[in-house]
Amino acid sequence: MEYMMVNGYQIPALTLNEPPMPEIGKYGSLRRKFLLENAPMVFDEMLLEGTLYPHLAEMDNAVHRQIEQTMQTLMQQSTAPNRQTDPMGWTQWMNALQSQAEEPAMQQIYSL
Image (cartoon, rainbow, N blue to C red; front, side, top):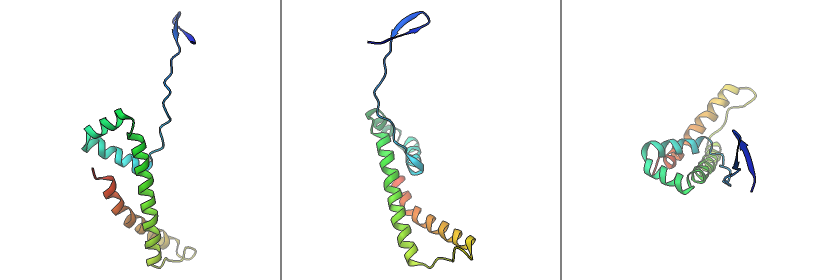
């Protein structure tokens, strides 16, 4: 066993072998906030069991996939403005599609 000196005393150098927490992203953060505010018992239970951050990462990935699929469908259904001649129109069009795609995905985040 390894020891380290702290204020003249040797104490065991103990470390926890915890797996690194995955990145949770925007939608995972929204889910975390929702659970913390609206289902604190579920939040605490998941945190104690060690399933909270994997759940948040999976939720973030699932919502990203759903938005990506919806965006592809919406882009095929409407005609985009020319990006070279009308960059502001193209940006507005893409932002509108993003908002439309996020709306049904948010239901997944804000449900128990």
